[in-house]
Length: 111
Image (cartoon, rainbow, N blue to C red; front, side):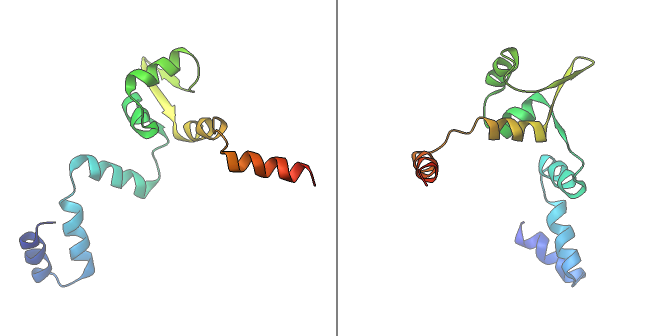
C-alpha cells in the first residue's frame, strides 16, 4: 500500500479496522474478487481459465485432458465448469510415489 495513502487513512481513523479497510481498497479488482470468494467460501466451481491456472497448466493442455476424459468437468449451456474438490481428487489419484515412499512400503510389507 502506498505509504502516503495508508498514513492519511490511519491518521483520520486510528483503528486497526481503518488500516484493514485501506489495504482492501487498494487491492486490484481480481485480487478483491478472490479475497471475497475466500471469505465466503462460496466458490466451488472454476471456469476453464481458472481451472488451468489452478492446475498450473495451459488452457490448451486442459482442453486436451478434457478430450481424453482425464479431467472431470461439467457443461451447462455451453459453459464448461470444473469442481475444485474433483480437481483436487484427480491430482491425488495421479500422485507418483517418490523412491523413498516405494522403499518404505516395501520395508513395511516385509515385517
